[in-house]
Length: 317
Image (cartoon, rainbow, N blue to C red; front, side, top):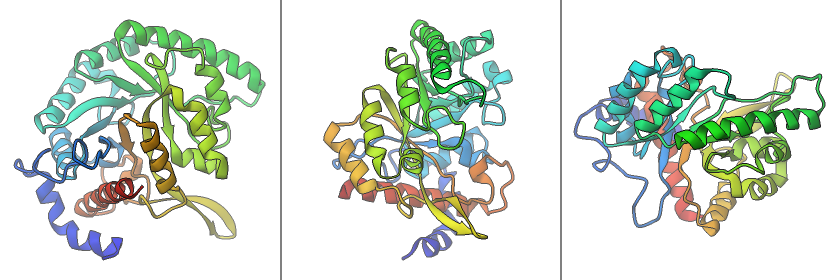
């Protein structure tokens, strides 16, 4: 059965199953802790921001995730201005569904806002062990070397915050013009002297392939000592209206060589949590839209198929 037929067939029942109290972690098709050594998969919650905390957690459990990589940022599942009330509620709902909530995604990039320190401290007290930073940018005026020096200082100050709190900050390499870290070497220089348990890297293979082409593996090897989690997704380059554009795809349907990548991870004995990013067309849900144009059951069926694909690719690697 191809992906489209699977989604059409499974879609009608998966929303009901995902919200049913009996289909929690351990009852459904688990990903971590089985005999095949599958990694722990955490769903980046941006793709299901149309669900409330309880629905989000139960849906993720029924789809086979070990936990959630919770959005705690403006427009996310938890708004930073309401973190003291909403973050405990979200974490409680996730744990009630039998899932872990060890990761979250923020916009934090420095130490200029005391609220961010209090947010991180509360998150750690709730059992969250790591968070993803916001993105850093080149300003187009300062040289690359001076930009690296500036961010070395900025990230070192943030690492000290993290050390005091006991939480790990992780910078994700993104692709695109002006994105600090897209070249890999620049973020390496910025973090190379830091304790990666205070501030490390969330390695994103899709962005590494987008920017690095065939040398993405060298970027992985360079950052490997600093990696504390992984983000996975897939893509292709497509000619649209006479221009080549990047198009996100479901897992295993694009240009990322998951066979080689997963093989490398196995060889290294990786023990990183994996954040699954669903950024292909989901009717706007992939962008965090609260009212996506695609039926909810089809969105959840598509995400569930990503879990199936990842599990298969990992077993075969």
